[in-house]
Image (tube, rainbow, N blue to C red; front, side, top):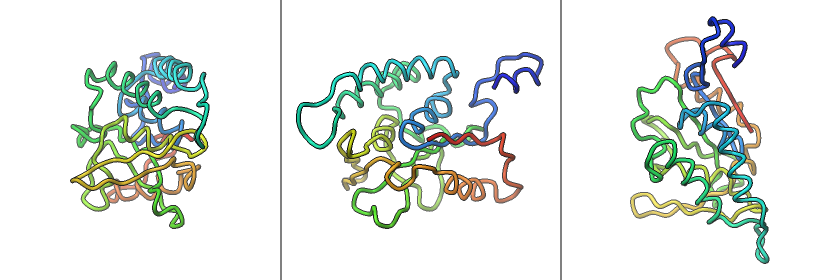
Length: 201
């Protein structure tokens, strides 16, 4: 971003003002959402992530297959969302249709791991295969729910509950899926140059 700012005469530029698409999975999904959907500066995102790590990962569970408490993760994520939007239950896709910077977060459907196809949580609406309509903190809990770290999360939509686990189980590097989505989004023009994409994992 420093090079981008220098190229624009030293004006401060935040990631959501420069990138067309920001995407990630696992901890990269949290970074992608903070920089894209929540429009945080890089310094603020680093600060918030450091607080999340301190709140969530310092104390391990005494029992169970997952090492850390999902409730602590969810509380930390709600705090980040609330401070950024004033509403901890902010929807992942609410009001984002016309936003220049689109955010993608990946998770896996727990019942369909063998298929190897990730579920996309989007900050924008699409007409086909839209993915879950959920809150930001639910989407981020889903992408973080690696079985070794956190238990799976159930997301209820239209009275139907679906269980999700971390995107890293089947999508540790989501670049191929991001490029497919980008071609779908920008079918009327060339795929954006690499500088217009930010993929984290």
